[in-house]
Structures are given as structure tokens and as C-alpha cells.
Amino acid sequence: MKRVVLLVLVVALVMSVCGCYGRVAKEAFGAATGGKGKFLPVGPAGPGANLARYLEIRLEPFDGAADVNVPGDLNGMLLTEFSRMLRANKISERLGGTGRLIIRGRYLHYEESGAGGQLFGPLEEVVARVEMVDGGTNAVLARANCVGRSTSTTTQGAGSKAQGLAKGIIKFIKENSR
Image (cartoon, rainbow, N blue to C red; front, side):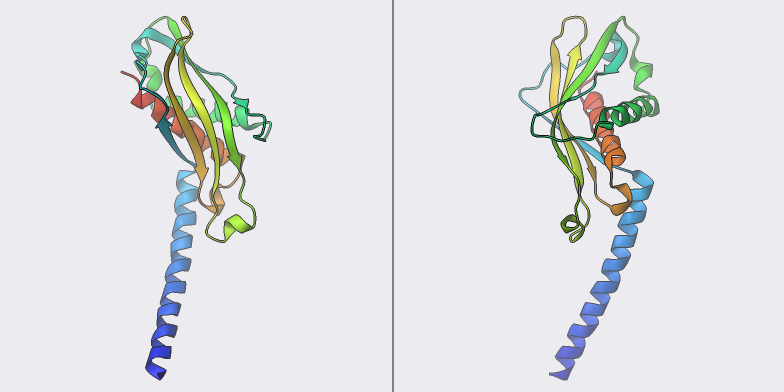
């Protein structure tokens, strides 16, 4: 019986130490990489965008659904992160035409982590329905739900969620352009 109790205590100690180190590693990784971004296509695949047809890509301010309460400065943060990531991913180098590719969207969900969210690790996210639209014809070229997520304490806040959402939108553009 004593051996079982001792074994349980040793296992509990090892798990708590590993758990703490795991959390520290997760926080450090989160601080280095920032918010996470993903996208999920919605509906049938559109024709996508031939980036060589466009001179510029413009991100329009996103609308909010009536029941989604997003911070007033989220669109500004999203625009800043999106512009930075366009340059970092060298997407502008693929542009060369005369048209305008418009990225427009609508916020579907915005979540901040409260005290209860800290129990299993912080998780905050923003979800938006995003469309790639030809500026000349107003034709929707592709549509997706894009998600910006923070999964560590170091990446909490609207700025990290905007950064993650911008990452998701950039991935969406890259996947749907030729």
C-alpha cells in the first residue's frame, strides 16, 4: 500500500513539474510567434484571384454582426497587421495589373478569456466571414471563415487576435490565388 501511495505521489510530482515546464514553454512560444491564424473555406470554391491582374489589395473595415461586441480599434489593428504581413509574405511582388482586389468581412464571434478561461489555458478568438472580391466587377472570388486566436497568456488581447486574424486572411489569399 505504501508503495502505491509513493508511486502516486511521484507521478503527481512529475506531472506537475512537466505541466509547469510545458506551460512556460507554451508562453515563451506564444510570445515569440504571436496570435495564430487559420481559415476554412465556405461554400463552393470560387475562381480564386489571379494576383497578376491586380495593382493593389485593399482591406475594407469589417462590419460586426449585431450580437458581436468587438473593440472599436480592432479594425485599425487588423489593418496594421494585414499591411505588415502583406509585405512580409511578399504578396505585393505578385501584383502587376490595374485592378483592385478587395478583402471585406464581417465579424461573427469575438471572445475574451475570463478567469474561467485560464483554468485550461487561455483561449481567446475572433472569427470573421471574409470575402475576396474583384473591385471592378464586385464578383466574389472566394469566401472563408478566418480565425485569429491567442492560446497563451502572453498573446491575450485584441492586438494578438487581430494579428492572428491577419495571418488567417493572408493564408486565405495565398491559398486562393494563382
